[in-house]
Amino acid sequence: MFGQGSPAVIRLSVVVPFTQRVDQFESTLVSVLENRPSDCEVVVVNDGTYADPYDIGDEVRFVNGSPGKNLLELLNFGGQTAVGEVLHFVLPGMIAQPGWATSAIARFSDARIASVSPGIRSHRRPTKILAGVSYRGHGKRVVSECSAKRVAACQLTYPVFGPTLFAGFYRRSFFELTGGFDSTMSVSTADIDLGLTLSTLGLASVFEPNSLLECDTPPSLADSQFSLGKCEERLFWKHRQERGNPGAARRLLGLLGELLSRKPHQGLVRIAGRLLAKLSSRHEDNSAYQVHVHESAKIAEFLIKQAEFRQQEQAVRANSYRRAA
Image 1 (spheres, one colour):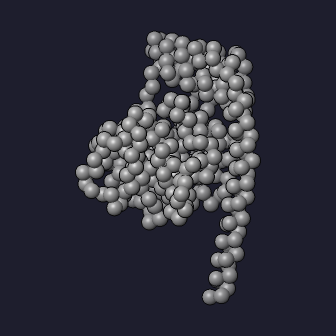
Image 2 (tube, helix red, strand yellow):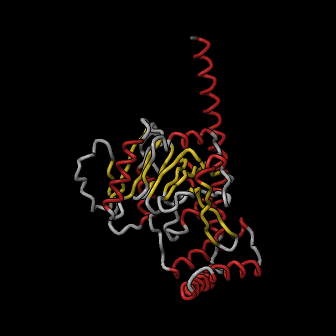
């Protein structure tokens, strides 16, 4: 269970995985420590190879995952050990800006908000802000963007289903409810997979324009074209019942668009991955996932009502204190 054994007395847990690039990791960690809010813990998920040369164990909680865990397993392990009400996953290479967490955390005052996507600005594309991940019906993950000059207007290229894997805030209770990131998915599709599941539960994800991280270039989440094609096809079949089937003609047009947008051999390899996954995915028994979603939706509604009740209690208590003063 996520956060088992520890009371959620900390508002925010920032989880940073160590993924071999020491320079990127340390730059990210320094930016988080310099700009973190007061009611915050910082958790580093270490694969056992980072030795903490600066002796910062009093400021950072290091937890060692098993060697050989992939990135998604490391992030889930970090979520399991965190105690904050809100989990914030940050990949090495992301640089937190002053006040980046405050406005994002404030969005969780709405009990139905499951995740908040911060803005991410790349120094190589300074005119655009990455605002989160979206989905096209043929199993395609796309990144929603907005203009850096008009970020407050939130005019996004696509609706946001959740944060990118680069950096995202999640309400811990809902992250736990879904089981976290599906580690059998590729790193390129795990974020939208989780976003779609949260949406199916009736929960909301929002983009917060005042929460900003920067990077030279977004960290590489590149899978092989074949692996990515397989995971995109699995994504389609997993969420087809809730997202609808776009029909054979629209799927074919979408796949042709992918083929034409890449070098011919890359597109063909990706389509081959999809075809292989289709042969197995279309015959997979998806009933266990459907049952899990159905039961989780009931639990999510209970958690929402519970949170709303606590908010009402706090408001009544605050009013009583003001009258007494």
